[in-house]
Length: 224
View 1 (cartoon, one colour):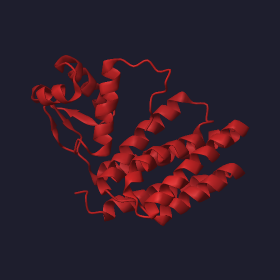
View 2 (cartoon, one colour; view 1 turned 90 degrees about the horizontal axis):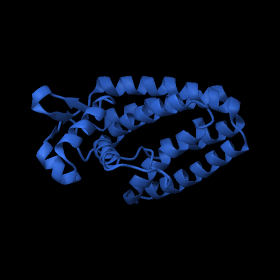
View 3 (cartoon, one colour; view 1 turned 90 degrees about the vertical axis):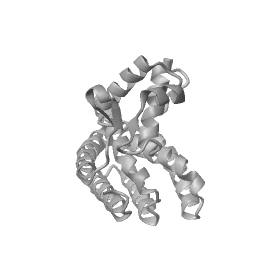
């Protein structure tokens, strides 16, 4: 998930929007949970009118459902949506890989090396049983995938991929378990293929990687 840079000037609404979004993706606000405005107003220290605007913004990403006069609720999780998000992420990410590999330069390669180094360090801790690094892994996982496609030269494509990635990530957070050595191996192979500019190889790994993620979530038994 993207974090604001030091230069970013955020309004209170921007900060609360990001916080609620993160709470939904992390599962702190559970799928299907009613969002009671008075309670949420106190929790996020913002007015009800601003809160309504923020929740309406989140409906555009299908993270929140508006219930007319009855208020809002966190979008439910379903096998159907998980499959749809996996397909959409595969389409967007494989397309972005082709564009990025064609345009990437030495700085792009440096971003990939740095991102994989951080991700591999977090994954090593997780494999050792240190679950406290899960939050780091979530951030570094996105940073690694983002670095690989960062030379695609399309802000629109990157924004769409970021949104879909986060919604897909919500399902992994619901599974409440790390995917283990297999996901580490996927990332290592993807890293190697990116530096070789092997478009077809990297695309195949990403598609398989995404489907393995779907299988992991379904096997967790936490999705009705």
